[in-house]
Length: 459
Image 1 (cartoon, rainbow, N blue to C red):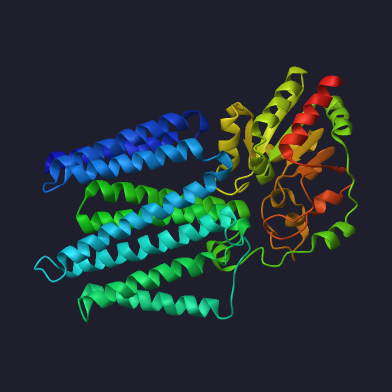
Image 2 (cartoon, helix red, strand yellow; image 1 turned 45 degrees about the vertical axis):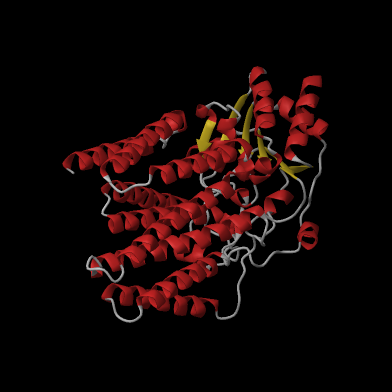
């Protein structure tokens, strides 16, 4: 038993080293490898030290999981990565809930049934089931299966409060062992499932990066709780690490939006969408062709590219890198501005640009890049909206007021690529579009960048 725990500690150390290495793009790949080795050790040790295991079923499960994981890795586009992360969070929570439920059905009514065991079973099922349903609602919103706008109904918070109280009372009753245990566990499962849905549907697309990181934390907490159910130190360690790192990431995301977690969960930002046509009439929009934009780039010395979700949708990361490479070959300085909540999940833009082999040293975060805009000749905004909206600095009535933004408006010229004039995730129009130093180049980002590169080569 002591040797088993030593191996679990070794696995935990590798998890921590892997997380550390994943904090920087240059070492992220090796960080994944180190963490995978740690997980392999934990799995092998668990299989070796626990008896009465049906290795045929384990082999079948591993084969099925390998096939599904391989298909996801090959088939899912980078634009679908947020949805895949949401699904994986849900599967993690669901697996923890199933493990705890299996332990409940095995131990209920036996001498090994204890208050401690039933309490941890209840907590694991509660968090795991909530994570499962909440994650699949997040997936459905990201995938467009249901509306990405906040979905609210009268008395929603009161309803959530009642469901939460019912669920907590059921967990307490389960812990004390009072009443019909099967009925209580059913109430825990159903109330947790409903709460996961009703807590996620009012969250709008603008807050999806925070939701994904929070659900990731929930899945870790559920795993740690399942570890206590099984008295498995490896599961406790790994679950606690995922839960803690997810909470830290959630805090970073909230800071990047200058909003509290409570406001993200209950604020329903993005519910009131301003009419695009009416908003456009208030702005002095200047539409340019790619040929005209190419001449502006040709005269510029310093360019900052600002990627957003429009770049992800168009899968334009490779085209953006090709334009940047051409400009740098002409002796121009090119940098990339990365906002912490740009896209649909934490690190979305970093992942896309890394896939396109953009050099890591060109990727600059918000605090590092903002001073660079003041002597920037051209800021190229590719599908970003709320994270470059100057209203966040001065309009107290704006839902994004106070959110740190990329100061692209301080550049000499701002070239904005969008497919339409539709508002961003927060549901508001961007006043930047009407600024004197702003011009619009409409169209799909990949098509626009490809034509821009062709026009630059002709100059």
